[in-house]
Length: 171
Image (cartoon, rainbow, N blue to C red; front, side):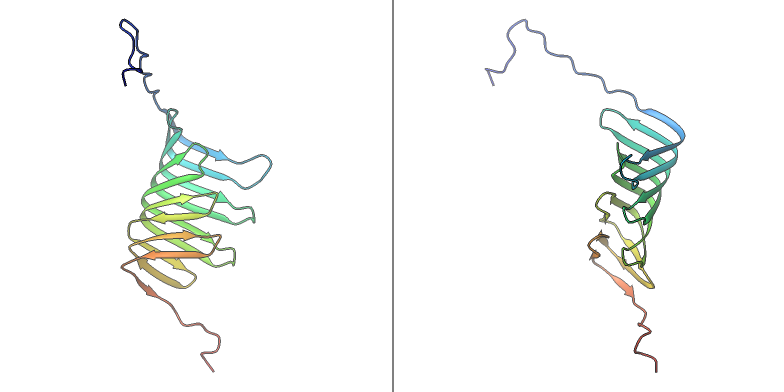
């Protein structure tokens, strides 16, 4: 500690003041790579970019994420917080994500908070969530959903409705 202390009379570096956020009304953020068509499109009533942390806050957010195989995932929330390239998005307030699995089954997630990882097609929440997968519906205390691996880990308590399969039951 003594070796790192400034010498007598030496001036300390002054802290840099944080830069003010840039605010845009009715804004659109696109993170669409030139060499690969998939990407993310984020729209909102108002966006605030905080350059010090490269975070973006979006009010009344609507998000479309494009997968390499052509699937489109739609998300919406009253507010979203994203990193600069929109590969990680936290959806706050009335969060809803709709997508189609690689097998072609529709999936819909509803919660007050959803944390989406766009590149890896994962969604997590620690708050109560409602999941619709095809014609099945599950309510749970939280989830970790990996769309690519087709894995859904639910946190209790849970309650679900699973309609019977049509094949082989009715004759």
